[in-house]
Image (cartoon, rainbow, N blue to C red; front, side, top):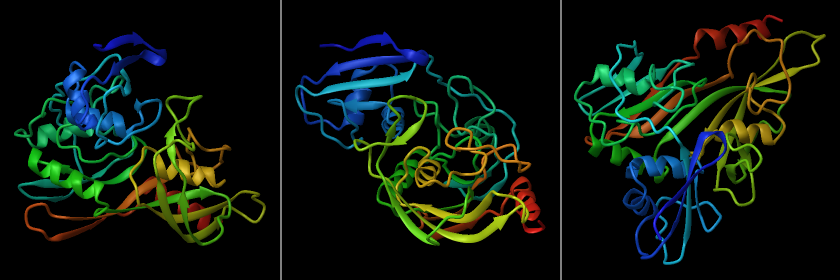
Length: 318
């Protein structure tokens, strides 16, 4: 049976396939059977929970079996061939193989419907004209940050380096640490949240803790308790959060699930705040990885941007 496509809700394209011959990795099977879908793009959809096998989530490495029912949901307008744009980048580190960028809040990482330009990919293509698109819309992209999350992100300059870095992420050899300001007084001061994540069945654009979701683990430690004034009923907690897995919106959903959402998180926050902040208080402050060519352990740090620092100063000064 060939692919059968129907337009779903929210401009999604739904592709249903029945596996005729098993033994192939899921990402390879999808690249071979879904038109205009590369293997790396398939991996991105799998990571986003946009692909199910027999009604449940699956990993890119899953070996499909004869009779498996595979469903793919993807944007109806698939963006390809991003163009170079001369957008300033805050480059923390660069060599012949990779670069590490301190991404500004508000910048989308790669082109997507509604964001065909002005992305990190467009900026990187202008900075590295030789970077190949590799048949998809995410050249050089190894991992992602949400649009309104600032901080460190690594970009590969060659496909070989990208594959090597992606493997480090899969093997949990990359360390990422975030700073987040949370609603409420978080206790205990150290903790580990283990809760499976998947697409919210009622809100397809959101992630939720669901029993059938993929394993997700986030460790945290409290840095500081803050309050705007003695009369302010709302308290805040500044934390470091370290995701041990790399699911979409993981830190935001995990912290919201224990009753302490990230301040100004429009999707998962549970109340408005009077703090003068235009976006969610989440910043990727530390990144550690092994250089794919030299084997050297690389460690990077990015201080809080000015908008987040201003909020902390306001709270500390009462």
